[in-house]
Every structure is written in structure tokens, then in C-alpha cells.
Image (tube, rainbow, N blue to C red; front, side, top):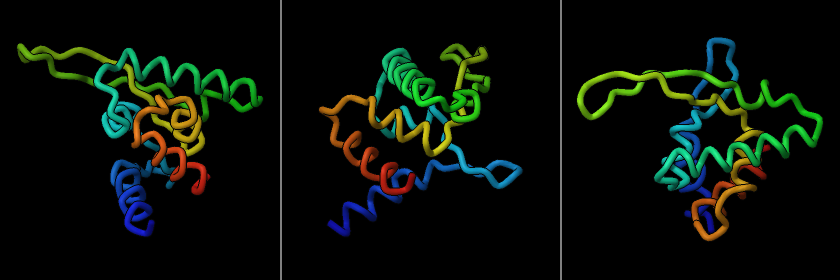
Length: 117
């Protein structure tokens, strides 16, 4: 059990960022990969469900799911702007709760963010 806890903490701590004010956040695009969602469209649905849960709890979604743009390089070398989110720990928790329960990594995320939140 200790090994799983250590692995889980490392998995999510490795992609945690700290902003200039000392606030922690996770990039949705990075979390998507860790949670093993191949397509942004599928992960974006989970984000939307999490946002609805956040709104229904009377918590400001703009504070928990900060939309940011970032540049992505296409296969042909061109650049385009894509949507990303800076996610609070609570937003990550809600995403884990709304994720695909068939994925083992979702169970790990649920446990990690539940304990940490």
C-alpha cells in the first residue's frame, strides 16, 4: 500500500506547478495525459462535468478552472492557439470524481486528491 501511495503522490506532484503568487495548479493538458485520455475532446467532457459540479456547490468556477491559452505546434510546424486550464487542487478532485471509473489511474487520482483536498 505504501508503494501505491508513493507512486500516486509522485505521479501528481510531478505535474504540479506553482504560480508567481505561490499558488499551486495543474495544467489540464498535462493532467489529461496522466489520466490516460488520448483525446482532448473526451477529457474536455470530464472537465465540463467537473465545472457543473463546482457550480452546483456554489463555488466560483473561474477561480478553480482558470482558462488559459497556449501555443501548440502542428505536425507541419505551424502554430495554433489551444485552450488549457490551470486547475486548482479542488478542480482536479472534481475531474477525478467525474473521470472514467474503468481506469486504474482515475482511482489513484480520486484517492490522491480526496486525501490532499
